[in-house]
Image (cartoon, rainbow, N blue to C red):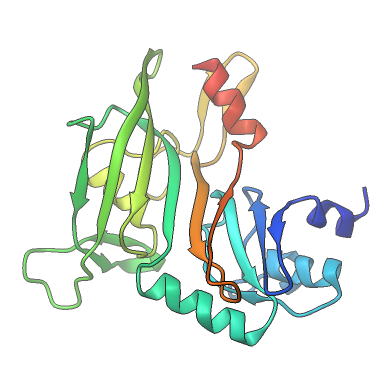
Length: 233
């Protein structure tokens, strides 16, 4: 498959104003320092479309799922404002080491920047703390050879960097694999399958179309590796 065709195969929905992609794990949205621009998802999408696109929001390199791009500056302004004002409903699926208790609730833990691009729970009254809330519910749980594992639905009410990863760790149930916040870089699941990225997936996004002003829901199915994880569990 041609590289451009591969990128276009990731499109979940589109209009003349925006498009939504199923972002694969392992691809950065915007290149960081010392990273080749042509490897970023934005650059690859622009090359495939033959036009400029604007990044509306971001997902971590190893997070998969729904990602929105704007096709013009006006749509970018409108969609970006919706995200900034908390008017976009995002739903993630996460596989955690341990089962959150209670089975449903809201994690209300302010976050603060830490060293090397990380985030951490803020100390009480700490200057620079950013209020952060995540609603969650346990969808399923299993007893496994690595201990209890849960499939958790998480809906961030705020959009802080690494919010879900830090919040899940803060309640004692980090992602099943997470070298930054879980102390685990990979996890053998079966004899022939090892999970090598953090199992976090942006399952759906609900937003207001900047042109029609109608609500839009875009959903992304679990990618192959997380589907395989689910079947193994």
